[in-house]
Amino acid sequence: MIQRIIPHRYPFLLIDKVKDVVINESCVGVKCVTYNEPQFTGHFPGMPIFPGVMIIEAMAQTSGVLVGLSMDLVDKNAKVFFMGVDGVKFRRKVVPGDVLELHVKALRGGGKVWKFEGKATVDGELACEAQFTAMFDLPKA
Image 1: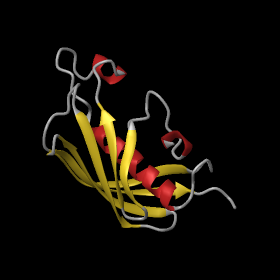
Image 2: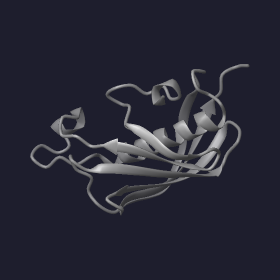
Image 3: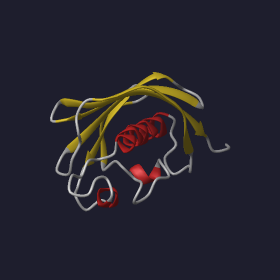
Image 4: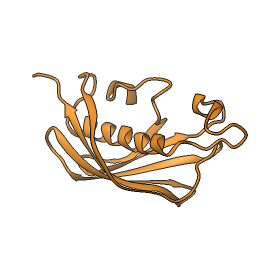
């Protein structure tokens, strides 16, 4: 279902599933971090750490699924683009074997521009938090 809503594909599709969807409000994305992912060959050899920017991207992809479901964009080839990222804080390393939960909440939305609050956790422990804004290129009716 995720690939029917957002355009991302391997190796840049960073969420495995989405759950607890509340239309127009919130949802939780899940990313199972595995050692065989391509970023770990260089970040960092001998000490694999999931890159912080990829955590933020995973939160954004989760929010893209929320908007797609909220605005009935399944199979409609909508695109999404970052407009801003604010207040980012990283609280713990994310490493292979971790299950990253991406909690996103819509602060403003309903049209082309949405603002979100995101919190990424591992086993209930905060790994990253941020606010971000995205613009959705909606398909022509």
